[in-house]
Image 1 (cartoon, helix red, strand yellow):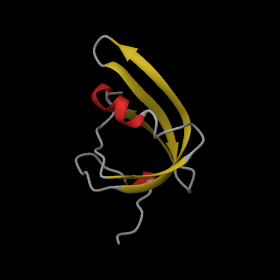
Image 2 (tube, rainbow, N blue to C red):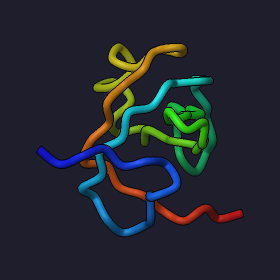
Image 3 (cartoon, one colour):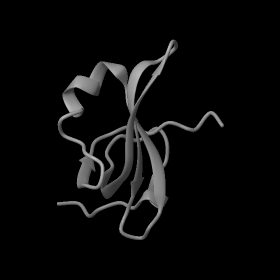
Image 4 (cartoon, rainbow, N blue to C red):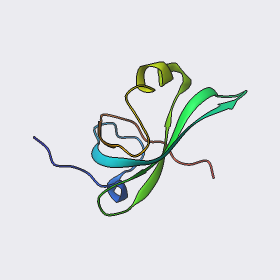
Length: 84
């Protein structure tokens, strides 16, 4: 079984990541362009943080599985560069 990655290891365009993070902040957001998404701030055991988004197509699948304050093992997700 492969080891865990850290937030500082994450790079765009790879989907085989495995991180354990705490959900520091969680909220839903609506925009005309994206619809309703789930937004979150995640922190790993080193204290490094990253912003995460669950796209509108997957919100119903994940909204009961992710709660603020919980630690989660997240695997096989994709990364994208920030537009900022």
